[in-house]
Image 1 (cartoon, helix red, strand yellow):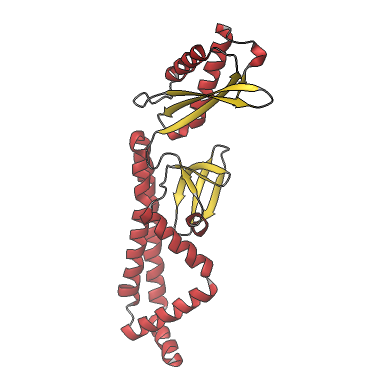
Image 2 (cartoon, one colour):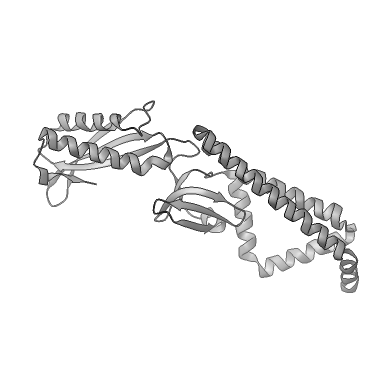
Length: 267
C-alpha cells in the first residue's frame, strides 16, 4: 500500500505539474492583488460605502483560492480516485499531528468570514487593544490602532475571546465624551453648552440624536459627571470628534465663566 502510494506520487508529481501549479498560483496571487487594489480604490471613491465594499474581498479571496486549489487537483494533477483518497487521509493525519494550531486558526478564519462577528473597516476591541480591522485572513486578522500600530491576532484566539464591535458594519458609531465638573455647577447651562458644542463639531452625524446625560460621582469629593453621546460621520474620526468637542466645551466654559479655570477636569 505504502509502495503503491509512493509510486503514484512519483507519477503525479513531475516538472510539468510543478511548473503549471506555480504558474496558476502566481497568476491567482497577482489577480487577487489587483482586485484588492481595485476594492481599495472603490472604497476611497465611495467613502460612505467603504465598510461594505471592504468586507466583500475576504470572502471573494477565500472563494477564489478554494476554486484554484480544486482546479489544480482536478485538472493540473488529475490523480486517480484511490490515490486522491489515500493522499487526503495521509494529509489529514499529518496536519492533525503536526499543524494543529494552523488548522485551528484556518478553521476559525473560515468561521469568522461566514459568521461575520466583525468586518474589514469595523472598530473592535480585544482585551486592551482597540482599532480598525484592516485584514481578515485564513490564519490571522489585523487591526490598525490609533497609535498607528498594526496588531496581528491568530483567528483561533479571536474566536474564543470577547470581541467588542463599535459599529458592526456601519460607517457611523457612537462616541461618548465625559466631563467631570464640581457638584454645585449649573447643570441646565452646562448641558446646553455641551449640546451646542457637540452639534457644532464638523465630525458629528446629525441624523442621529445627540444626548447629554448627568449623574453624580464621588472621587475625593462630590462631582457632577456629564456624558455627551454623539455619533461620528466616519469611524476613523472617532478621536478627532472627541478632541474637537472637548476643546469646544473647555473654551465655552471659560468664556461663560461657569466655574473657575482651575476647576475644570475632563475625561
